[in-house]
Image (cartoon, rainbow, N blue to C red; front, top):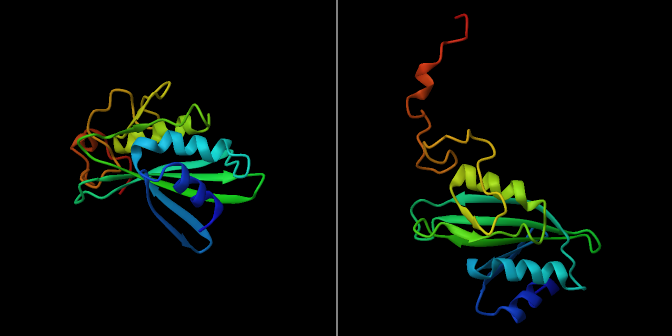
Length: 163
C-alpha cells in the first residue's frame, strides 16, 4: 500500500472503500461525504503535496443504485506522483462537495460535470452551465439515458449540405 493510500486510510477509515493500483496508477474509492476533507488532507500533508487538480470527470452507470461516479485526477508536482479519487453519487441525491476552495482549477471542471451530467457541487462559487446554453433544459447530454437522436430541435435547422 502506498503512502497516500495509507494516510487516507488512517485519517478516514470509515470513508475509505477500496484501493487499486494498475499500470502504475493508484485509484482510491471513497465516500462522497468526505471528498473535501480527503482532498484537503492529500493537498496539505507535507509528505504528499497533491498540489495540482488535473481533471474532474464523471461516469454514468444507469443500472446501479449509486448511478454516478465522480473522478478526481490529482498530481503532486514536488513528488511527481498521481492519484485518482472516485466517489459515487446517487441519482436521488445527485450532489457532492466542491473542491474549488482547494484548487481554483476545479472551477470550470466542476461546471462541466454539472452541465453534462447534472451533478451538483455543493458550495461551488458559480455553478452554472459552461458548454450548453444557459436556457437549455433538455437534460444532460452525457447521461446514458439522453437520446442520441436529440429531442427534435435539430429538425428546426436548414440542411446546410449541398447533397
